[in-house]
Length: 264
Image 1 (cartoon, helix red, strand yellow):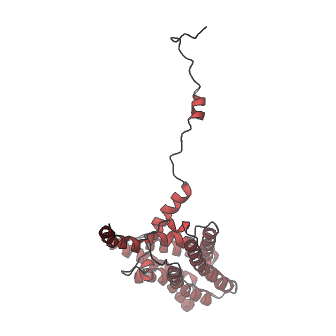
Image 2: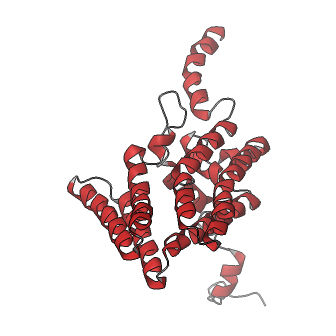
Image 3: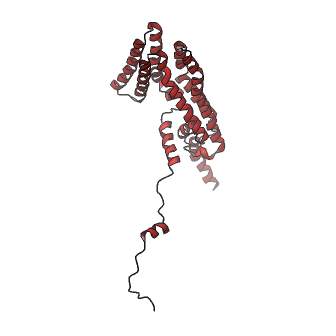
C-alpha cells in the first residue's frame, strides 16, 4: 500500500540535523588574531622619522623617558655609596620616582611610562628593604631580563619573531612578512640580536651580584639599561629592513597608473 500523503511525517532528530549541517565556527584563528592585536599595540609605541627610519630616542620615551627610567636607580646607587645607609638610598630613589609620576599627573601627560617605572622602583625597594641587602635592589631586574630572554627565544622558535610583530605594523607589512622565508629569517636574526641584550645583562650582572659588588652592579645596570636596548633596536631595524617597504610600493602605484592608461 502506498503511504498516505496527508499523514504527517515523523519529526527528525535534531541531533541528526546538527551532524548533517555542521555550523562553522565564526571565530577567527586565535593565533594570528592575537598576534595581530599584539603587533598593533606594540608597533604604536615605535616612532619613525620623516625618511621612514626608526627614531630610537622617541621610541624609548625621548630624553624625558631616559631620565625618568634612569635617575631613580642612579640616585639609589649614589646615595648608598655616599651614605652607606640602605634606608636613605631607598627613600631618595622612591621619592624621585613618585615625583616624576606626580609631575606627569599635574601636566596631564601620559602616566604609563612613569607609573611603570614607579612600580618597578617600588618592587626593587621592597625587596631590598625586606632582605636588608643593597644588592637585592637589583634582584628584580634579573627576573625581568630572564622573562624577556625566554619570551624572545620562544617567539623565534615558534617562527613568530618578536621584532617581526613589532616592526611589521610600523612598516605596513602587517603579518605578510611571515609568508616570505627571507623576511622571516631577517626578523629572526634581528630578534636574536635583541635577545642578546638581556642575555648579556645576566651574564655580566649576576657575577657582580654574587660578588656583592654593589657599585659595579649598579653601574652595569645603568650602562646596560635603555641605551643598550635602544642600540639593539636600531641595529635590528637596519638588518631587517626590506628592499622596499609596502608603504613605499603603495605610494608608487598611483604614479604608475597613468602610464598604463596611455599604453592602453
